[in-house]
Image (cartoon, rainbow, N blue to C red):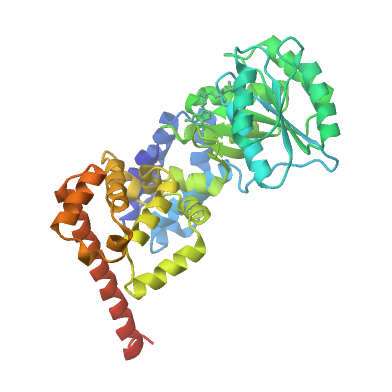
Length: 436
Ligand code: GDP
Ligand code: MG
């Protein structure tokens, strides 16, 4: 979806002036792209009409950058479609807050329960996970494993007690043990059926959850919308969590689920790891769909991982040219802890497309790391001592070749030189005062 839209819109971007015909043509392509991404037909129609109305009605055609204006409108309307503001969880005034996770089998309820528990724990809450799926083999065990990983207790009565009784007993347990949030993992089915809905309704009336969160697999496209509608009609949901947004189809479901159910998307899950959950930001999702890159997410990710003090120190070192292999290694590890490089690059505006198909060589990074790790401290700090025999030793120690070691040292020296040039330039600019 992103690529399609990007092509269409970049055609407009380049234009100095667009005609009404250009707008119509662009809208036709946007429409096709959305339909192809499995966005609900009615949603697409409303969307296109709204954009057209605004594009033609305003003075877009006369403005200096009409292409960009249209992109702006498309972006704004996409954002509005997914809910303008970010929706938070509602916490009960009298704890525990009861959250019930519902959805089809395989949507990601159990995994997401663990992710949410982890997130809540970080916020200072004392969550309790409740094993309410007694049907799926090993479902309880799965929740226990997840709970263990995030260090959150799991309440279970085994698979011989009814989910309603389990939920009630869990509530009592939470009250007694001071758990202020209770996350009830429930069973799913491959398809919606009466028995499932009845069970969920019974749990609902027994424990009166503050939040019923519907977990939806975003890869299921149009199906996701039907599922969301059913659950909302028959059970009533308070919010939606979209999972598997790390997959290929990132647009469709997000766009229509909100429009069809009118319920906010509260979280987005972007991977199998228990850290891969973030609040859903409609504006960022819109930009992402439009291929502008999710700069804000990237920055947040970077900030969370990159210690600010360290960054300042590094900057000082670069300026004083005392940047060493030691710092280089440190920096590499910081970057790596942010996630796979390819995923990071995707978030940079414009980069996603160019880099598609180009494999980012994570292996090479590992090699570089191994080489630096095979250096002694002295060598890292003062690379000029790296003579031939030392290089040979490092290559052997890191499982690389002397050529690879040479290349890295050369690159490092070039980078250092470049840094020096930059700082010199900055200094002379300050001195000359030309740019005051
Ligand atoms: P449940 O049946 O609804 O409880 O679903 P599970 O939590 O057992 O998840 C089903 C599968 O989807 C598991 O293999 C999870 O690892 C995987 N999964 C869940 N969330 C995500 C996600 O955001 N991204 C990816 N790639 N996989 C996910
Ligand atoms: Mg499950």
